[in-house]
Length: 107
Image (cartoon, rainbow, N blue to C red; front, top):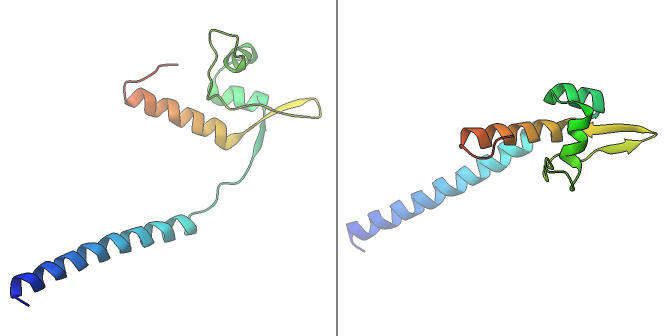
């Protein structure tokens, strides 16, 4: 085996190991990351987070409304109260920020 062949094999193995280590490190990092806790919030708190009123929330969730937002978090009804999952509201807000940064859809 020539010196060039040996170097090529070493470089190929190095690339494979780098890729494999990066993948395993990413998986380890993800497994060690703190898990987000499930948290229901009342409608009033969700409205405060988004700075929108009840009628606006209803429009965003109504498929017949011209203001309907298909990816808006769905409400959760329990005992006559309306709740939202906090992480879903925050994820919705983050998505809108990312869209704005990319010059996409505006709310």
